[in-house]
Amino acid sequence: MSELTKGRLSRMVAGLAAIALAVPLAACAEKAEEPEDQAGLDRFHQQTLEWTGCGDYTATETERTIMGLVPGLECTRMTAPLDYGDPDGRTIQVAVARHAAKGERIGSLLTNPGGPGGSGVFGAATTVLGLTEARSPLLDRFDLIGFDPRGVGSTEPAVDCHTDAEADRGDVPLTTQGTTVQWTGEDTRAVVERCARGSGGADALAHLGTRDVARDMDVLRAVLGDEKLSFLGQSYGTRLGAVYAEQFPRNVRAMLLDGAIDSRQGTVERRVFAFSGFQAAFDKMAAACARQDDCPLGRDPRRTTTEFQKIVRPLYAKPVPALGGELDFDGAVGGVISGLYTQSAWPRIIKGLTQLREGRGDELAQLGFDFAGRDAKGAWTNFAEANYAINCMDEQRLTEEQGNELRAAIFEAAPFMDPGVALTGARDGCEHWPAEPTLGFPYAEDIEGLPRTLVVSITGDPTTPHSGAERLAGTLGGALLTVHGESHTIVTAGTNACVNKAAADYLIDLKTPAEGASCTL
Image (cartoon, rainbow, N blue to C red; front, side, top):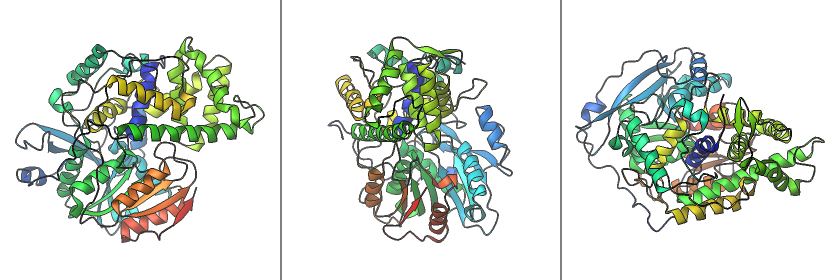
């Protein structure tokens, strides 16, 4: 394995930025209109899918192994227009996975695992495993469907901005935010041109936004034969669900959104909000560490951020050996952030910080690799590349001055990430993108004809804080299930009986929890 460098953390933070999206800027994209007449889409709605095995729908050995544990998982590709404004033009092939209902079938349950950039095909497999362990009735009543959104995973064309070897070396950073990366205009232009060459051209990059993915979802709904959509989205999947609800409210049967993004927050506000959540999670992890005699952050919880900075800041100038390469400041912080997503990973963070004090970075480097989906043989998913590209079509564009201000605001909200050095060049990696963003902020407001939805949110969620989920539930006029604990998303894990029952009651019987309902991890 090779070094975990600035570019490596850029990949990880790009993944976080997808989930940590965000005060509306003056140059905000206008809110898109609902899709016009669906004329011209009949040939897409009437296509027949040919289901096969899923052996050709994986990128890494990890994906192949886990998907092989799910008997009956089938895969296919669905044809959709690249540009819905030109349905007779170029097409894309959307990868889809299905696990058929085992009992009295209601219909399909379409899922999205988050990101953007997460593979829904792989997510379908992990969801089936979690719900099987929980003995969830959802697997009896629904065909569980996952799909790789345009640009992701096995969908064609997929976003490809660098090789696996370059990812290992950290040669191609994809963001400046939350990192120490400093870019010139030539740097950002080179990244976009490289992505266009590997991803099907500039026109493909111009049609990767969430609004286009939501339209793909409606084609998939029709192809699967469902009059109404039942949807379960996690993290970024809650944005996707909210946009679908805005565009096709009368096509919704049920919509469960887990780990929700506030649809009212623009890019800057959302990212600062999300990184403040990571600081809160860091503080809780550090407080737990401080109760241990051998805590590398010391025994005083009030000083843990300062002690952390003492350990990691020297890596900015002098990286340490890690897994055959090196770990620098960005890599160390990225590894910690990767471990803050779930309380079960806190011991790995503590172990990694202990190793840093001894002059090695193996554990934190491995945490970063695990988060990004790199397998033991050096194969990577395209999560970070797709994440970057999709966000370019969703997020508000920043000037270099605004980018520098945002980076400073992130470090103020999450001081454990502050390198303690002066930085400039926080340019927007999308500044040379071939199209303007299409999402618009706020979105999914004042929707008419939408049935009651359900938002599930964990109080200690590190990247989609609970207050944002409360606001999304209010925006959609839906129910809220509060889950007390520390983690990011819970429904598809199948590990909490209280959450499992609430999810099944809603998705099967359309019964929402009572006002004020809660569960505990």
